[in-house]
Length: 580
Image 1 (cartoon, one colour):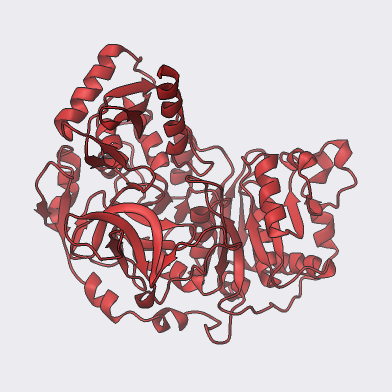
Image 2: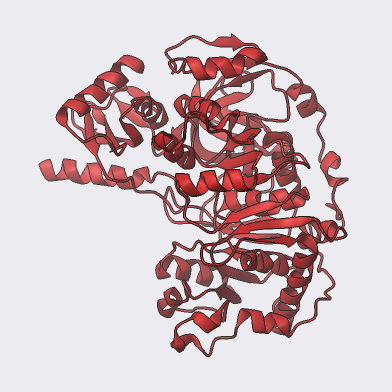
């Protein structure tokens, strides 16, 4: 899979080599102690840090807010607005407003097990809805603000949502939502006059008491109603049980490496799993301040946020890091930040980006792997010293999980073998996925949960992402993962992003085709396409280079930023059918 040799790095040479040797695709740093912690780990180590317990149950708002509200100055949220001034909000304030919202829900007959949705940007009011829903023992349902009416309708009808909170910028989407639940409108005064009859969020809250006894739910009762991102097929329901708090804690503390003194910012939108799990629940569970930036993600807004709040611990998707790298010219040569650590999740992180983060943002970035269904399960752990860290790999099983590679007969595979990533549920006490909410698919076989992702096993408990099972390209008898080709293309100075798929071909079964987005200073040309093909052939292999390259203005993506390769596959199939 890799051309270059493995390099064993000392800690002191790690930063230097990342900055100087971009050609090495597999860099390894020797360290220790992960295995000892992993082997001795039990859920009790985390359970003792929480207010509730697996046996007696939890109130999630109590775990992530109320317990920290005793200190009146402890800040839960720093908010950077678009039209509103920036503001900070304490745990004590959020505790009171959450109680008011919980009383509002109770007055409407909404309680344990009921779904409450929020269609709003990253604002303090969104956090109030999350916390108040959880305080009432109800189930919070995120709705991404880029959703159209059809996506909203599918989710609220499927979940039988009891209440939907929204704002003037998004309320019009609900006009054509069949079966729309009752709506609560924030900032009704600036909304179109036709929405004047909708109940006003602030007025309704003001009428409620700030005293509310938190409703406890069982460890297996849901507190979040998620839907998968839809990279493959229709979005499926995922009801996250309260026991997931233990897994979230382990990820934040040991993989993200979050410390009490950290200023932490997860760029991901809380309309999606990584943002809701680890920009809202995760940091607040540890008592840390979280940060919301309502502004659109740009290099300028990102750097402004990092500087203003002196962010020391950053989490984002590879899409975000790639965008920053593609606009490297915005940074001055002597620009510096307070960053101590960075984390990446959503897609595999290529070595070129890792090197850039190290050089320009001034901190190591670790690749993490997870799914909406499971949360994070495999990581390069910032706070646990692993025996080895392979640059660009998803790393080792997170404590409380056992991650393996399987063949089609459920045999566990060894070093260098390619198969499907799976969770050994019998040896994963923090595994919390109970199955899709409405039985849309059965991902379980025997004692294994099958992720649908194809990986390379390194034979030592770690893995590297190779692609979704649907994404793997079989060309002339070779199986090629799109991630390798995409990473190699990204090494070229002209390439900002790429999406690689298999295009049907009579002779080879499929040929590799790359859809490429260029950086702003480059223009598409046949000469550049030929140069990119040669680059991949020379850097990767003779069978894994793209025989076709098509330049695009942008790639199709899910709202959470993942490349939708199935759209590219359909586009390529249509081209082949047209020629036939």
